[in-house]
Image (tube, rainbow over all chains, first blue to last red):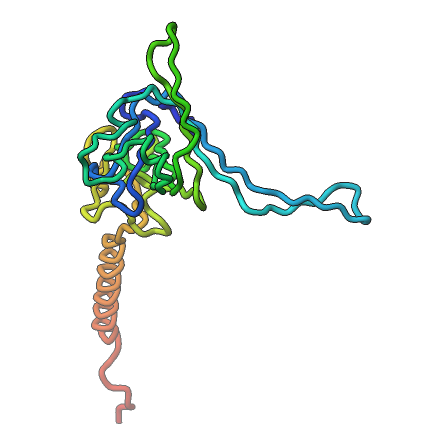
Length: 160
Length: 84
């Protein structure tokens, strides 16, 4: 097997957001996040530990998982504030509006780009939170963190 | 060389595009053409050639049997009864 290298132009890590229930492969309802600086996925299985008198060590069983995607972007104005004139609520309201309205969206995190067949992605549904736009004189571009709080499971898929 | 598009076979069934095309090294290809070019065995490939060889072998064997039976009587006399 091989490492996952995102350094080529056709294999960049990509995050696509989509109106809930819409076709995520259609541009009409999706935002492909621009200017990503980093992505971090959390798939944290809950655990319950217990002790019994007949064992010298704790036993454990897993419980429900907590899933989220954390990323940082250099803000694109249109993506962040929306274009204000689109039939797609996500594109119309932008990232900030979608977060403010607490609107659930679908998403995919492509590990190695969106074009080469067989490359992997993780998908789910959730809510945009954790926005924290920031700027300062020595870093004059607005950047923000963004967290996708996943509602339910993360699922894996293959680029077709 | 890694052929990640083979992952689109699930339990031997093709789950990719209906036209059986994939993007490989940045270009669109038919998976059947890729299989021939890179000498890959597709999970849903039909074993046509092996069956034809088996049929031909069976026919050849039958023909050989017929020839053997035709000549079987050549060394014997036609009458088994005693002469008087």
